Image (cartoon, rainbow, N blue to C red; front, top):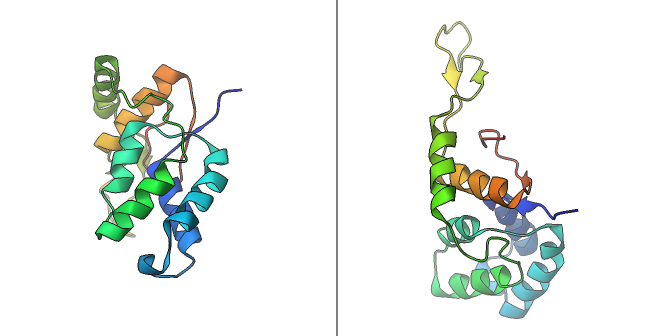
Amino acid sequence: MARRILDTNQLINAWHRFRDGRPSQNCTAADARAWGQRYATEGDIVRPVLIEFLCKVKTPHELRLYETFLEQFKLADGGRVIQQDWDVAEEIAKSIMKERPPRHRGSKVKAFKQRDLSDCLIEAICRRLRRECKTDDRGYPKS
């Protein structure tokens, strides 16, 4: 069975569990490596997830920790995003997702789930690789 692709929110949640309330400056590369090895058993990642996760970095020390953590994951797409992925992502972006109930009681305006560039691209790559994406994102565009 093909391994799942982890969405960025899965990595962020894992990272917060790893830190367990500790500031990043109290974490070591060895800690990040060990946690990454433990969590990498949950699934693989794709290049857009890697980039989106790195966008959360705030300090040079944190960058080293993030990179060490991410090195433990297999890049299922080989780090390549191909033209087909962009074309499929565009089609996903054009699709209208299911309606949500209005945000405020008594409102007659229906809200639609908005799509996100990285989510559309991640889903497009998952479709090419015939993999399922593990995510907690309620707005994630499922096939």
